[in-house]
Amino acid sequence: MTEMAKALLVDDRKDNLLALEAILQGLPVQSVAVESGEAALKRLLVDDFAVILLDAQMPDMDGFETASHIKRRERTRHVPIIFLTAADRDAQLALRGYAVGAVDYLTKPFDPWVLRAKVSIFVDLWTKSRQLAAQSEAMRAREAQWRSLAEAVDAATAQLRSDDPQARERAVELLEQARWRSGT
Image 1 (cartoon, rainbow, N blue to C red):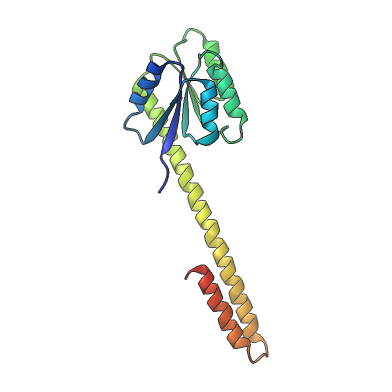
Image 2 (image 1 turned 180 degrees about the vertical axis):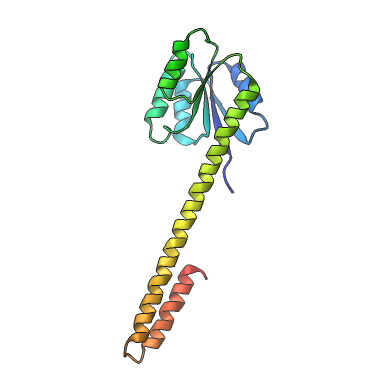
């Protein structure tokens, strides 16, 4: 069973966090709300997220500084960040957001359906990425199993070709061990 995707919601105002949680309700994503950049960075140490919705303007560590830290970490640098802000007058803020690695920059008031669509896409990409990783791991395990079986067949064949009278018994034993190890 695959784990549910998570969205990290970062805003210093609780009412904004509640609104974001309401917007995302019904999507196949678990919302995790925090009230500061520092709290977001701590949460990113223990959880994986499909997307981050980040308020650009917060006290102490603003969204830009938070995003900069997120993008510097190997573990989190590929998590998409969507900036959300009430400051729509200054185009430089949007450029600053993109410069620190944001995939989008939405100004309030924004259309909740647009935000839902964007989050849904990133959740879908995250889920498919997890599925591909699991399939890739299963393929690697199966390839290792086939290599092991091929080596056992080669060893058994070498035994059968020898002049040793006990060779047939050792060949059968090698093949039975290989079958047991492979689970077939």
